[in-house]
Length: 348
Ligand SMILES: [Mn+2]
Image 1 (cartoon, rainbow, N blue to C red):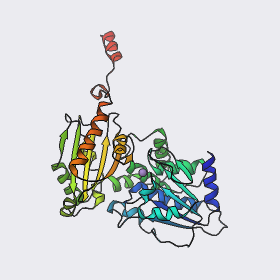
Image 2 (image 1 turned 120 degrees about the vertical axis):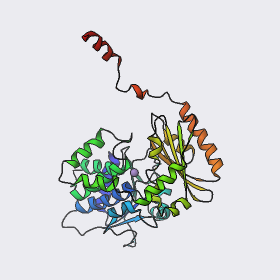
Image 3 (image 1 turned 90 degrees about the vertical axis):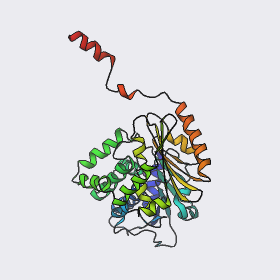
Image 4 (image 1 turned 30 degrees about the vertical axis):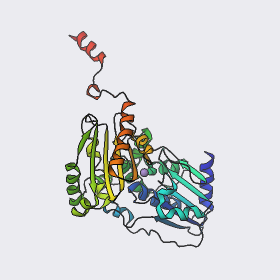
């Protein structure tokens, strides 16, 4: 890959590097930013002067679940006047960087490392690998360059992968994802502790918030769409943060017969953040795109400014179009095949 070699050469010769990830960062965003910084540092020629690498993320606060990731890591400190290179990670578009998109745009020498199918190649050099997570892509890139990958970096990579795939249950996982996970588990890393940290560590507030969301659950389109909503007041009542809303939408898609799950979070009057989940071959990224957002086939989101009723109308239309486009797998018969019957009959 020609552009990858160019990027690696750029990274090697740059003294001051800025890494920017997306606003309201999830674990993959933070882990990939920090892992990239460590990878660059740990693969630097020992005799050369250490590079200045600053990480930027537009967030008033880091969600509680991700605090352990950033512990001891300096964020948003501009330690140099001029960067030689600016790299974005886990951002599908320029606007995902929030206020730091200005910093990104100030420079010509830029790299975009991402895994979203909707990425619009906004940088000078774009490395968009359709992987489960940016962390997985980063690991594959580092390996392809025979880079040293420390246990510290592996912990970050593992965390980015398991959180972006809902513990390896989402359609975005591939053979490569499992290979990366297998390699990391093969090291002396306590992956069980990471699993516990990310998946058995919900706050009580989040449990209460889930209760509120489930209270709002309604079924639409012959029960094929599960819709939930939360408001700022719900969050305040439960003393929950925006981060506590992550994953709640999965409770909708886990329901039998539901092909699309929606969680609409009212942030301000007429401003909604909407998470989508799909299964059974339904592509929720298509739906999100119609609504001005993006994502992956089974996991997508969009931001909507306008009335809830209008949003619901447009969204339901997009959902119904997508549902009409698909013949669904018969999952009730997933283990059954006709040959088995024949075999049974022969043996009788
Ligand atoms: Mn990601």
